[in-house]
Length: 378
Image 1 (cartoon, rainbow, N blue to C red):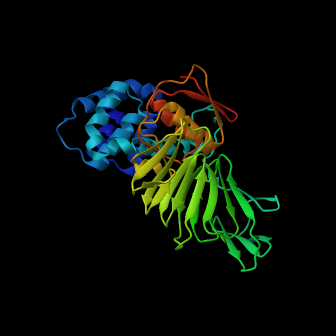
Image 2 (cartoon, helix red, strand yellow; image 1 turned 135 degrees about the vertical axis):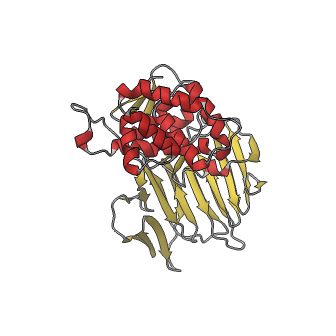
Image 3 (cartoon, one colour; image 1 turned 60 degrees about the vertical axis):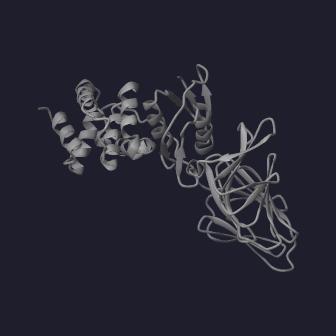
């Protein structure tokens, strides 16, 4: 029995130590072991009983090895169907990513001789540009905590990666704009205490004090809102054809200018989108024609971005690449047209672009990176 056979057998039985797992993954990474590994995988898949329940943790771990090995589409499809009952399929890509991190973080001493380290782009980080009422701009990427501006009696504070406001009763009302460029995300506490989480490539315009009959902000891009209730003073979000009226709630608005539709998804509470009331778990969609449709939503998929994940369930490659453009501040082009492909599963948003493209390779999406341009070759 070869060392690969021995370690693979121990891995499948669950008796591998962490050191042995690292050794196994290193063997899997060697091209000369592809044929032997394929035989092991063929035997494993052939022996799987479709009627037998599989322990979730073991299923996900086994599947991660199968995917690392880059088995054919038909074999992967069978494994996905076998493990769907234990929710393995939804977690597969995140698990593969964890394994890929091991290979990327190996010490230089174990890299093959002559190997050239490819360029990489890190994941988005906290950062934004704040435009004050007088038009002056403040980059929030690397400022220290404390007072960052004073606008006619309104103090603008930065702390723990979030902007907040402290206004005196005599403070003049002016408008500020918070912009997250591509590759940045940010949190803000509005003057009324409401919290807003801005996704990458988003802009929020708001007053420094809500002194009128309502509390109105304007959004371009995507944000999650957690609104502080105020009796008799509704909160409103205006975003590309949507007017969301709120009475104390948590909801997500996606209104990117290059998306085919604008959505508002209600997590809890009550909102009205263009006068149509949503119930928790519902989503209002406005497509290019302007018609409003309301349906049940997969809230876990909607909120994946805020929870540190990409959720590509039922997403086409164009949608996947638009998310990567915003998150990694890249431009995506298609060398041979846009492939007609659908994706599934989740990937951690903390991974670098190189790790993401390695995962996409598993789904036969081939790319190359030139500067900040990602070229899809298939």
